[in-house]
Structure formats: C-alpha cells, structure tokens
View 1 (cartoon, rainbow over the protein chains, first blue to last red):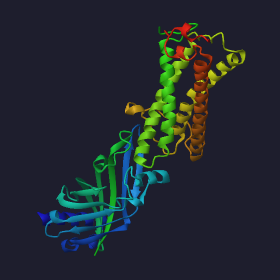
View 2 (cartoon, rainbow over the protein chains, first blue to last red):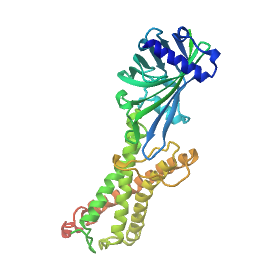
View 3 (spheres, helix red, strand yellow):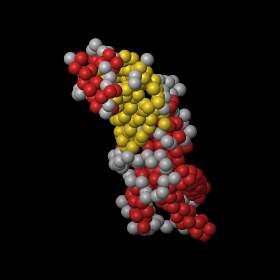
Length: 192
Length: 192
C-alpha cells in the first residue's frame, strides 16, 4: 500500500516536472525536509459580512516535513508560526491582530502544528491531521496537502484548510467577520 | 396623552426626550472609554456597541424631529424674560442639530475608514456605508470632526441642563417638570 502511494507521488512529481530524467526514486522521496521561508508562504483569509474580507500572511515560520519511506501514514509535519510576523498591508490591522484581541503576541509568541496522522486521499493528495496550538488552546485540525513537485532534494506542497478561530480565543469581531479562517499555504522544503 | 398641547408635552415627546438624552450622554461616555481602554479586544467590541447605539440614536432623532414638526410646541411660561424667550428656540435648534450631526458624522467616519469594518447594529443587520471615498486623510478628518462635534454637543447639553435646573430651582416654573409628566400640576410650580 505504502509503496503504491509513494510510487504515485513519484509519478506525479515526474508528471509535474515534465522531465522523465528528473524522476525521483522512492528512496529519494523519503527523508526529512526543512521548510524554507524561501518559496513558502502561509496566507489566510477571513470573510466579512457583505462581501470581501481580511487577507493576510505570516512572514516568519519554520518547520519540518518527514516522509516515511516505509509507511506514508507515519510521515510527520511540524510547523511553528511566529504571529508577530503577521502582515495585512494595513499597519493598524496588523497591530490589532498582534494585540490581545487576536494573537496576543506579548504572551503567546508561537502557533504550533504537530501532525498526528497523514492519510492519503488521492494520487497526489493527503489529509494531514494534527494538533494546532494557539494562545494556550489545542485542538485537532485537518489540512489538505497536495504534492506539487520534487526535484534536486527539494519538495513542495500546497496545503489548505479551515480553522474555527473561536476555538483559540480569537473570535473577536464575529459575526461581522467570519469565525472561519481559510488557510492557503505553500511549503517548499529542502532535504537535510 | 400622547401628543403635545399648547401648554404640555405629551408622552411621546417626553419619552423621546429622555431616551435620546440618555443615549447621547451614554454615547459620549462610551466614546471616551472605548478609545482609552488598553484591551484591544474590549475596545473593538465597545466601538461596535458605540456604532450600534449611534444608529439607534440617529433613528430616534429623526423620529423626534418628525414628531416635533407634526406637533404643537408648548409655550414658555409667561414669567420667562424676552431675552431667554428669543434664545431658547435657537438653543433648541442647535440641540436638534448636534443630535443629528454627531451620529451622522460617526456614520461618515466608519464609511471613509480605510479599515472598512462593516457596521452591524446589535448584530441584527448590515448598515451600508455611505457612498464616500475611503482614505486615510478623510478618516483622520472625520475622527477629528466626530470628536469635536460630540464635545460641542455635550457642552450644549450641559447648558441645556443648567437652564432646566435654573427654571426648576431658581424660577420655580414648569419648564422642567412638564418634560417629566404631562399630568404634573402646573399650579404647584408658580413662582412665590
């Protein structure tokens, strides 16, 4: 089963890269990848009543992706986000998000995600389940990951998911602003 | 007795007067607190509450102006001197003007704010923004305008209250008590 999954991932990677010569062997895909801020992004959007919404991104984060060559289900993702790096393009909104109203960066400097399971859902996709901790509150959240490419020791994923901010004591402004935060993340990792 | 007569205010005028007075003074206090409170979370909620009461105030003031135009205005007592007789209507017009302009300027302020936070009075419905150009300069101007109009309004209210107290305790006439009940015996308040 796990061999089939990794085979599929490899075939997809080959297809995405469009270069048969750059095909990655199964043994090459397995390993530990450090998420690089270069080529990675964590964007989020919160809808607001009447249309539009609040869009922002975190500029600083770190993490690792460990792909288990023997059992993809035992692969792990660890991610740490530094909410002090949040940016929306509007300084006053950034200050508000960093305040006690939302992230409370003075008392809670990190948001962490630790995966607990990885379940394949398609040829190149999987659902990553894990524990998201923010402002001292931990809940189980699920994200959809899609493999986008592997080349030269680098791997890239697109990850998306929705989180209820009320779980983390960040529900200020509801119902004017939606309780749901939609994450749109791009991760690029280098093996090592 | 709902409607005014030539000598008495009816319950509608009395009710609107005290409700609007309570709202206007309360809004002034809430405005002072919400921009000084340290917690951004509480400040945000208080600002939304201030907006909700502001729209309620605006609606009540429009009803009050309509009621005033469609009803008789009780005459001032005979003892009132010529100068005060001329000044009183002007002060009343000014009071109506600030009751109208202060909440309107607040609506303008939220409409031109670059934060573009929707207004949702008491979380019941979306009050659309006025069709005005959003800009930092316009927001700065209307923060200043809204604040100083409110200060001017509260100064007028203080003047109005002092005048009412003068009538009640100094002149001992019916000017204040007829705004409390349409059935207060006028003979009890004649000057000694």
